Image (cartoon, rainbow, N blue to C red; front, side):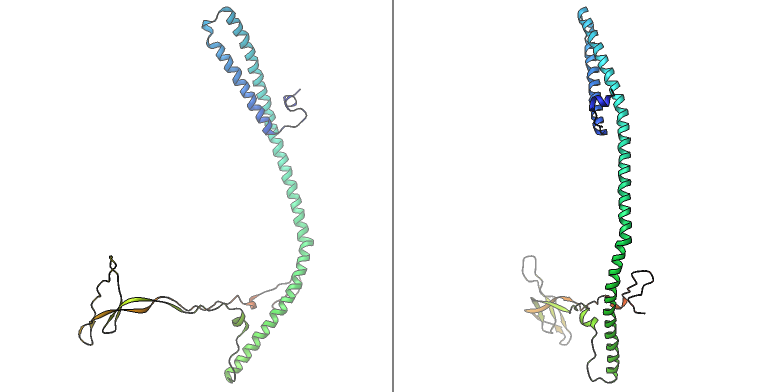
Length: 259
C-alpha cells in the first residue's frame, strides 16, 4: 500500500494536503529525536535496569524517527508530483478557456460584426442626409450674406453654428466693495490702511502740482473695484463638416462627404 493510499484512501490529494502531512511527519521525527536525546542525558546516573529500559526506549524512538524520515521522503516525492500535475491541469484549463474565447471572438467578428456594420450603414445614411441638409443651409447663408453686403436691406444671417452650437460668452465683470479711502484735495484717492492696533494709519503726503502745495486729505467711504474678469468668447463645438462616414463594408458607398 502506498503512503498516499494509507493517508488519503482513494481520494487524490492536493499539494496543500500533502504539504500538511509532510509538516506532521517532521513534527513526529523531531519528537522522536527529542525523546532519544532526553533519555541519553541522564545515562551517567542510571542503574543497570534503568539503562536496559532506556536502551529499549531508544530503539523504539530510533525506529519511530526512521519511519518519520521515510514518510517524509515519500511525501516529498508525492508533493513534487502533485505540484506538476496541478500545474499541468492549470495549463490545460487555461488553454481550453483561451480556445473558447478565440472561438467566441471569431463568431463575433463574423456574424456579429456583419449585423453591426449593416446597422452602421443604415444609420450613417440617415446621418449623412442630415449633414447634407445642414451644409445646404450653410451654403445658402453664405450666398445671402454676400448679397446683403452689396445690398444691405436686412441684417446678416447668423448660421446654425453660431445660434445652436456655440457656448455662451463670459462677459467682463467687476466686483465692487465699499471701503474707507483717503480723498485728497487734488482728487487723488488712496486706500486707508489699518495699523496693528486697528486704527487708521496716517495718509501718505501727496504734492498738488496745480496749487504747488501739499494736498490735504479726508476719509470717505467709496465704492472701489476689488476684482475683475475679462470677456471670454464662448467656444464652438467641433465642426460637423469635418465628419467622415466611410462605408461599412468593403466596396460600399461613402456616406459623407457625398461623392
